[in-house]
Length: 394
Image (cartoon, one colour):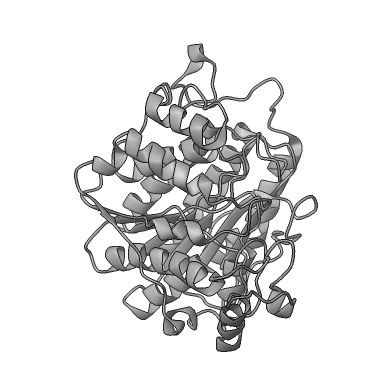
C-alpha cells in the first residue's frame, strides 16, 4: 500500500497536439484523467495532484542535443516551419505552433513526478501524458519530440539514483530510451513489444542487448503478431521479475502504452484491459519488492481513445494510489455522458473486457488466443541473449 502518490496533470498538456487527423489525440489523456476523477481515484488518501512546469533546456540537454532543442523551438514558432530537419515535419511528427513548449511541458511533468519520488516526498509518481519513448537525442520519431522517460531517468541518476530499471509495455519497441542508455550500465531497459518484423520501429530484437560497457542492459522481448493476454503475461513473468530482482534497482520507471489492445488500430496484438491491468499490478509489486516502492509510471501509446485508453490508465492509477478498480465496476454515468457529448460515441459499460459472468477473474487463454510456440520461442531467445549476463539460468 502506497502512503503517498504524486499525480501530475495540467490542462496545458493537451497542447501536445499534432492536429485533428493525427492518431495521437490529446483527448485520450483528458478522458483518462476525467475517468480517474469520476472513480474517485484522485481523492484517495495520500494523493497529491500537482501541475507541471516546462522542462528547461538544461534538463532537456541531459538527453537531447542543444541543436535539436533549438530546431524544435524554431519549428514551432509561428508560422510553424514545414521542413524535415531533425525528423520534424513528417507525417508522424508534423510541426505545430508552440511545439517546443508543449513537448517540454510533457517532459517537465515526468520530471515533476520523478523529483517527488527521488526526494522522498512520494513513493509513486504518475504522468499519464508522458511516455514519449521514441524520441532520439537529435531526432523526432514516432509521435515523440522529447523523450520524457529518458530525461527523467537522466535527472534521477544525477540526483541520487544509482541503478534504474525501465520497463516498457507499449506495443512498440522503446527504441529511444534504449538508444540513449545503450552503453550505460546504471540503466536496465526492458521492452516487451510486438516484433519489429511486423511493426514500427522495426527494431527491438533479442540480439540488441547493450553496448560494450553495458552488456545485457538492453532487454527485448519481440512477440509475434496476434499474441494475446496469456502469451503476453507469460512473457512478462518469464523475463521481467527475474531481471529486476537480479539488477536490484533503486528506482523503477515504467511506460504503459496500451496500444497492444485488440481494438487498437495501429498494431496487431490482442490484449484486453484485464490483461493489461494484471501487468500493471505486477509492475507495482516489483517496485515495492525491489526498489523500495520508488516507482515512476507514464502513459505512452494508445489509439482507441474511448474503449481502451481511459479504462487501461484508470486501472494503472487505481493500482498506483492503492485503490485498485474492480474490473466489474460500472462506468460512471457522468463520464459516459461526457464522452457522448464530447465525441458523439458510446462509452463501454464496465471496467472489464470480460463477459459479465467472468468479471473480476484473472485473464485466461481464450479459444482464439492460444499461447503459440512462437511466443515461447521469443521468450527463449530473450533469455538466451541476456540472462547469463545477469547470472541467471537461461
